Length: 175
Image (cartoon, rainbow, N blue to C red; front, side):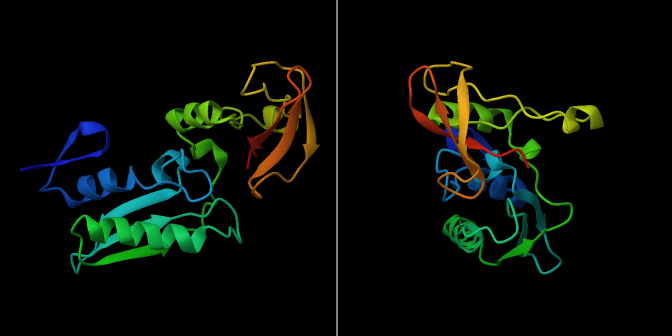
């Protein structure tokens, strides 16, 4: 028997990990609701424990993230609503979350929502030592933008302004 998944796909209901993943694909991040927890890359693991409970490993985007408690509660509530009777959420702090883990689809969703995504992952030490280029404006596409504040609407975003259309916008920080 197949269970519906977000987007109309079906998931083999005999595989609890696949079912749980399909459920979590529909759980929005409380601070950026256009992204699912999977898009954001904070769901680190989904496993069936020895006692048949579902264990979900979650990494906060940074230490002290105020949304962590809400995310934990949302994971439990969504999985219980989908019929999982025993759910545990485990904190996974190592390795720490990085913005490299935001999915390609998540980056597209951020930009469509009006938040400049962080740069695509870079792996070289030289690239990491180079200052990040200014983001393009997610509204008009101009590259003529400026940083207004390292602190945007949430601690994981910085506030920028487009010099072309004069609109302010958030940029997800590269962590």
